[in-house]
Image (cartoon, rainbow, N blue to C red):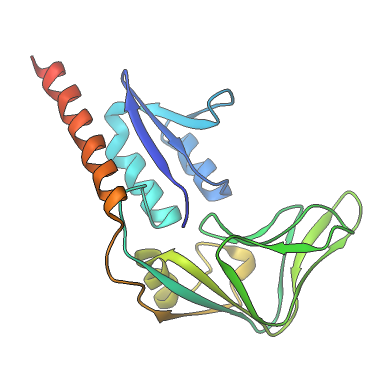
Length: 199
């Protein structure tokens, strides 16, 4: 699952999420600032709606319970990411650490065919998917999966623009009880903050 967490305290909305270049650009446009100590992006709480919308657009989730599925991704022409992992919407598919490190699959990813490797130079290494590689990415947010299947990867991950995606199972069609309870607590805490501000 893509780990996105949004908390609101003292007039600030904090977002912890996987690194994504598109998120960084849009976060700055929303007036967000990176808090290195907290390892989170921070925004004015009045922009919470826009921050949540941004997370949904980039990651397919804002941390709220969401239905998941398994996404099958095919690399007919291969793909690579320079000095980075191959990822989609913040979800790591495969990661290298250097030219000679090899590549390791991300959590919840199963290799069906082909292989991942490292390459490039010592300074400008990359993570590579061989032509014809196929993977299953489990526990992927269904709304983002549907968007990818419908629109392709182009606007989400430029280096995957030639890849194909297919939803091959629906998941269990439900969400985790613990996640629902955590969401309820978050909403109750936010409601209490609103009532206090209005008093």
